[in-house]
Length: 351
Picture (cartoon, rainbow, N blue to C red):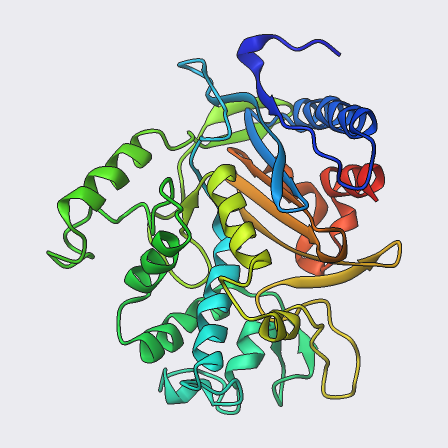
């Protein structure tokens, strides 16, 4: 399948990954063809992708346009709102506090947020999206509820959620990421919170932010982001290349110790013992006998995102798009990533 240069910006780095180089090359080329076909079917204007395997980025690409009207191609360096993927960073910060003995997952949410509506809810209930009366009765994926973990991060780190997140981004070398589109808004960011160099870098990234689109019957029309704010559940801006650095930090134990990561990647259980689809900040499920951990992000009629890891294969897929087509048709909030044609295609080829 031959693609016009304006529609595809792609780099290939072929490594073994347990397969002969020719086979790896074939799989990546086939995945590129399928991915762009799925993008076109979904009407997604711009899509960026990175695949990490065996501690390296083995493939990265951009399909379509980050700005249709200006004909600016999507690339691996295109910044997008990652929406719900922000949750994984929040979970990492909360669990790092646990590692340091500064926090207990069984602490009540009201210790940090007195007005929290569920008197018996504990931190782990919110991290795992378990709720009910009493808490832990059922799974209920709620970004609004998850966003209250701002208060937990702030209580542990003694700084704003935005600054705590910025510190994580800097520690991982994520130089093309921004802790909130409103970072330049003096009304919400105190003077002196960031130095001039950081603000200048953020401004440059935001000037390249992918334009959001609403797609109906295959036709894309410009839309707008529903929010510019940052909180524990949404608002981070990043690129697939930067998220690959984050993924490397996860694999190299720079984000969390292995034991803590295993805790995050273990399914929560309801009070009656039922296995629920979410761990702490991540969905967790099995595919062909392999553990798969993942998270998605979506703003209706604006953007979508997906990160999918197969830890035992040292394999990660990262997708960012400037419409909701990656996720909206598949109802991923129910906890089955194989509902997504994008994820299913990837898993089918590489597993």
